[in-house]
Length: 247
Image (cartoon, rainbow, N blue to C red):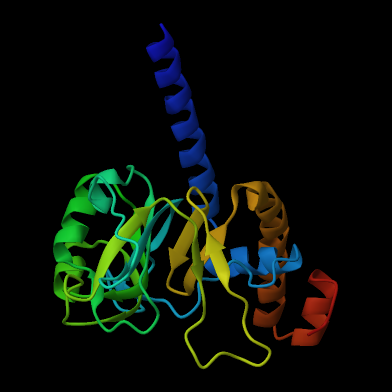
């Protein structure tokens, strides 16, 4: 009986998670970032410097959303020799977005074609890499979404290794940074990750309903502004009327 009760709770939690991800997926990353800025989140949820490499390079309507399953990679020389009991793709739940972090400046990739094959087969939504990918044609042939800092011909084995799964990842912008510096962001396991052509944003579970409440009316206001602009009305006039402030 206890096993059945636990299974029912897990199923309910999964359904709730899927429903939340679906609501966020209806919003663009720009709409989510705008909402988070209005809510006082200084980085707007942005994981900086990432581009969409697959299914196409910075092109198309692809958008993914799901809870983060985080993977920390360190240099092979790292003094902490800890390692997970499972391969990270085997451990990632269906419906999740794998978020991987490599040491800043590493020139090797951390995600290849076999990883996309395995992840897609088990229902992972996509890969978000604070690092590089490789095997671009393989990802694209699969249509598997990959967002990364860059790409490389080099695999990870000689350069990096996985140290831990489902741990907080603090991600910093690549240098040179802005003045004042753009803030770093911490991605925690279970945070919601949304990624599309414009970039990758993270929403903590406690902010989801606030984001949805902000983003919906903002979208409606923007559509009214767009309608006015198509009629030839001025930008300042239209924004003041529908957004309540001029640019």
